[in-house]
Image (cartoon, rainbow, N blue to C red; front, side, top):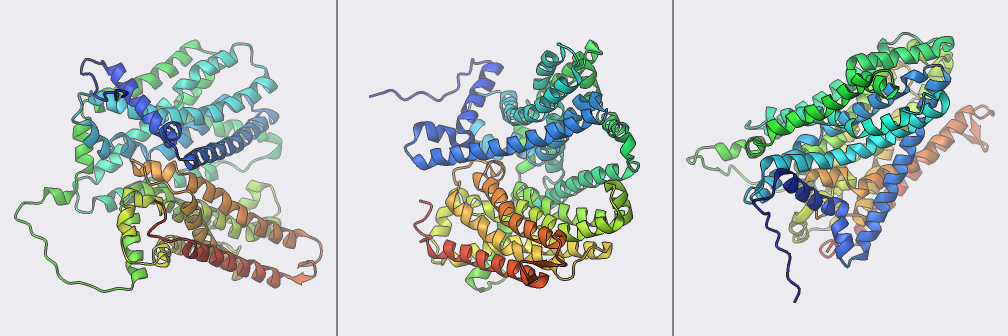
Length: 561
């Protein structure tokens, strides 16, 4: 019989060895790779392949947009700003998307329970967890920086040393924004630790900080002077320089890779690595203390004399009980809420910002006549709201969030309709107020197209919600160790976002053709209100079919086994 490998960690193993061991184990579990290599379930291989294909598609889209932006900078005479621009975009996106998950991932309470009995250095745990985040963001940095650098190299021809210096500095770029995100995320979690309503406080702080970042970016954009087409390059260069003043390491990086200052490049590298080293040295020895302080519920600190008193029982319909249960489950997860609610709030902030900015200033910024700008916004805003709703949909991971507790739901004598309806109602609870507030802001801005502006995004919430349930049924993930993996590394979420945008796209194309096609508001001889009404009816019908398919084709007590 083959001897089973001993999983015990040698106490004599040094910090680097322990970190490498933890990284290797974590990478094997990443995306279910270990199960694909050693398991016998072929469906997991298909899901992993599908996830990789989706990631490749998203990477291809990112490469295209970054390369196009770098091409525009070079074409407008602002080519020297391309390296700084690439680092600014990379750092901003890494910070924005990492602070929502960095603190929870680094100080995961499940790790505290599993790893505390082992002879491991706490610093090794922090380093290994940070490296996993770093590996993800390094791939994003490569997708962002390398295409822009290649465009700059081909169009500006900075010299033979540019590409080697860029490759040398690339591994150090994610350190600063990722470390800053980890510090901010940990502080946000620590701010609510020990309070009676810890989750609510943490959620409010996290959402408020996200909205502060979004509002700051809008304020920065609106504070720019009105662009002059003849001086576009100078305007873009000024914008990049303003970003470098806010984030000086981008300027150090650009000066170093373009060969103007070797000390600047060395300072960038030393600063990036040094900040991470300080973070690891400070938090590593305190891993158990920080993790315990962050995740300890205030209820566990009550005195032993406290007693729970049952004041009464309420009897509710099954679907309403499931809705309340799902709503509590939703708001109990900070990462779940911050990954979805922030996007719905972004919808409201964007609509309000456009209303405050006004049609005249938007027209000046877009270099378009005011009438054409008003027309474009009137036609396009409903679809923008629907696209944001597709990205903030809560249902694509709602089944996966049951995790290893799914058997409790399967053991209940309830029909799947009640379960799925409760999950859909949670998404509608979060999304409908956002759509209504956004529609109100759009109406105040003067871009409302009658009832269509509100009706289209509201009606499409139904098929988007049903689509999320249907896709999550096909691509569930119940073996996750942390909610971050379930929410942010879910294949069903990525597929749902792409599929949601695809079902909105034909309606958008049809309405734009209807608006801009010569023929005075007719399309194939049909009046405009008939076409719009048909789109809304098809959306309702398609969503109903998806919902009925989810409820009719499964035995919930046997599915997902």
